[in-house]
Image (cartoon, rainbow, N blue to C red; front, side):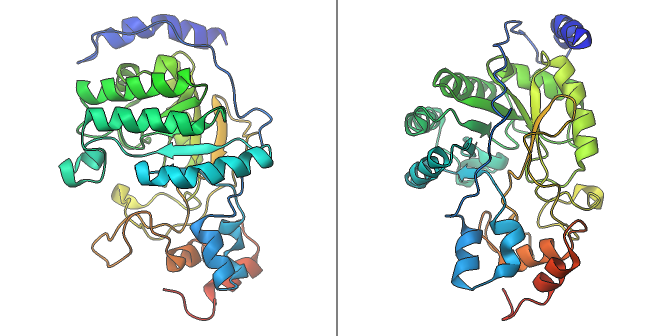
Length: 327
C-alpha cells in the first residue's frame, strides 16, 4: 500500500508533463469495493439463454448459464433494464451494466449509433441513473471511449459529467481504459484523469478484446499506480486463446472463452474478472457477412465453446457437433 500512496502522491507531477494534461484532481473518492463478497447474476432473459431454450440447445450452457454484463446502447434499452435489476434484487446479486452510447461512438460520426450530442447524452445518463435507482450497480462506462482516436476535451467533459451523475446516485463507475496493446499506461492515465477517474471506483480493461488476463493485469497495474490506486475489472469473455496477431478485433479467429467470472480474482488491483462482452454476440459484419454488432450468433457461440481449452471434452464436442446446424 505504501507504493500505491507514493504513486498517487506523484501522479500530479508525472502527468503534468504529458501533453494535454492541464489539471489533475488529487481528491480521490474513497473506494467502496462493490465486488467484495458479491454474487454475479446469470441473466435468464439474455439472447443466449433464449436461443438455448428455443432450440433445446444444451450445448450452449457454458455461455447461457454464466454471469455476464447487461448492455445499454441507447434509451430504447432502458425498458429491459428494469427486469434485469429486479432479477438481481431477487437473487441478491450485484448488477453489472455497460453504458455504450457516447456521441461519435467508435469515432464513426453522427451515423455511428451513439447519442446525437452532449445534451441528448446527458439526458440519457440522467435517465439511466433514475432507472438504476437504489440498485448500486457496477457500471462499465463507455467501452473504447477514453482510448479512442477521437478522445478530446469535449468527450472528457462528457465522461466526467456522466461519472459524477452515476456515482452521486450511488453506483460504482468503472471508466473503460482500453487494453494493453492500445495506448501506453501513462497516456491512458492522463486521459482517465481528464475523464473523471477521481470520482470513479476504477477502470475496465480488455472489454470486447482478447488480450490475456496476465497482460491486462500487468498493464492495468501501471495505470492504477498513476490514478491513485484505483482498481480494475478485466473482461475475460473471449481471451481463452492467445491474442490474435495485428490486434485483430472484429470477430477474430481463433478465439475461445476465457476464465469464468469471479469476484475473488486474487490478483493485485483487480476487483473482478468479468464477462463484459457477451460471448457469441457479433462484433459486426467485419466484411465477412456476420450479423450486426451486438446480435447473438449461435455459430460464433459454437466456435467459442468448441475451442475453449478448459471446458470438458464432452462440452466441446457437443458444441462442435451441434445439430441441427446453427447459423
